[in-house]
Image 1: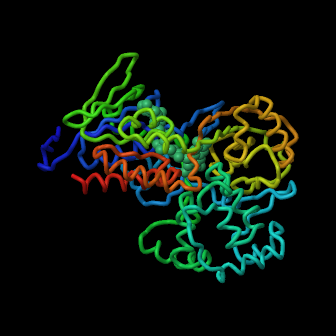
Image 2 (image 1 turned 120 degrees about the vertical axis):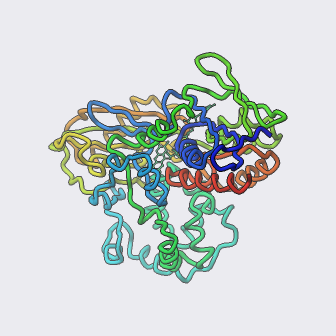
Image 3 (image 1 turned 90 degrees about the vertical axis):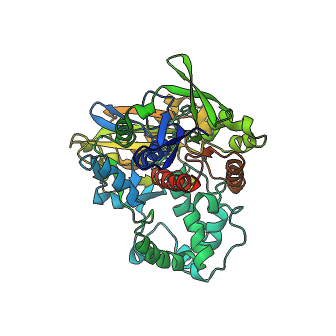
Length: 467
Ligand SMILES: Cc1cc2nc3c(=O)[nH]c(=O)nc-3n(C[C@H](O)[C@H](O)[C@H](O)COP(=O)(O)OP(=O)(O)OC[C@H]3O[C@@H](n4cnc5c(N)ncnc54)[C@H](O)[C@@H]3O)c2cc1C
């Protein structure tokens, strides 16, 4: 093996190639580099970030992918500090704590306290009573093959699924609760039942345990971004890593060699190669299929079965004076029962103010996902026209947008659907049979930016203990 000896500690380090400079790739690279590993990142595009992409439109920050991240691990703050990004860091405005759900064309605040829950018109009295029965419901048998929809209906009732979980799942995965596996897509939620016997009891007890580990739940974690948008983070990591990152280098094939691997890539139209001992892939499953399937006969099936629905992200700016409803929250999500053309809207300028003129309000709308994958074949201008009309109606907006722009992701977010465990187990087996290849990225271990960063840390620990 082509192992190099670290000059200062005499520690053994190997040469690692990381494919992809999305958040999974750059966070892994940042941590391994800190530990002294000899790393190179190869990224196909001109800029790092992958799904994290920020542009400036007429002075407005438009995040085409994630608009924020949840600070679920202290590692995020630590990386931000080490990169000298504290000045750029922004936390969500307190006003953004309030979230709305659409029901009968009205926006209802999602109740955040027991008295608010008792008062809300979002759920019927019968649904409220049904929810209170949750602690008395027994455990389910098989989590991996249970959809979120089955799990929630059994524990909390159908109305809670329709008016809380269905829109929530659309907000996180752009997903469908009938198809997503509760244990793979929301492992923490499932754990509450498995470990503590129920969601209400489990929530109370797990809060105490998380406090001890200095971790934050997704519900209590602070929401963050950067003054100049989310792409600041991957861009700054790449700047920090200097010539260890090669942009505009598309990996085209990988071969096993006597000493490890040869990674072939195209840079400026020229074929190049790099030798290494370890490869960390952070590219999406539908691209990894072309690079890794020749190592194992069964792998392609698993990569190909991971479903990435399309999502269109629409950015709109209006004059505040044209908006007749108060802008006092994070935005709203739409249950599928409400039969609208979009999934929900983030009130961007409320969450992160001071990014736009005080007399304007900006919004980010999400369209499509697993709920409406047919957006693939719909004319985008016609679709946007319909979405805008519905949005303006809900928000009581009288004028036309001052700015309108969009990004269409043909394959947006991997869906951890029922049976996903088969893929997860196969990838684990594949790595055991093919030492030196690590399959990472958002189709393993969670899709959120925070999960990708946490996974990078787990991966580094695995690498340290392997060597
Ligand atoms: C519309 C949208 C909204 C989202 N909203 C949120 C949110 O609000 N909060 C949140 O936490 N998460 C959100 N997410 C999810 C989160 O952004 C992603 O799961 C995460 O950024 C994925 O990071 P990754 O590094 O695993 O993969 P990617 O970002 O997909 O990165 C993979 C990288 O690999 C590169 N690549 C591909 N092929 C090759 C090749 N052959 N050679 C070299 N490089 C290659 C790509 O160019 C890319 O840069 C959202 C995602 C989308 C799409």
